[in-house]
View: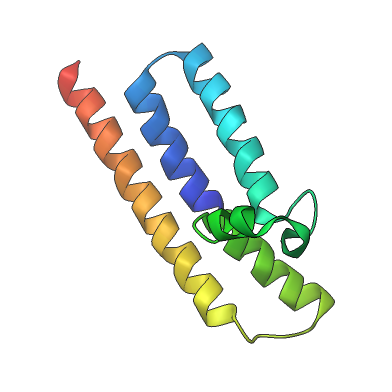
Length: 107
């Protein structure tokens, strides 16, 4: 999750190019992703339509892997969770690299 967040943060910074816009956007995105992941409350207790949206956020899979490992000592969905997290990290890093490369070329 840290690699994905770093890459997406770099992409957002390269696209918006202003500290105030990046920090405001980043905070809002982080709060929504944390809520949808089940970090504030258990995702299973959310309404069905929010649970459906939550499955499209990568933070959901990070929290799911952490909960399974700590609370249930289970590795049932670990391969799925790690695959989603690795693909998100790769995508975030690629977006960040492309955004920074474009920024350097424009200068």
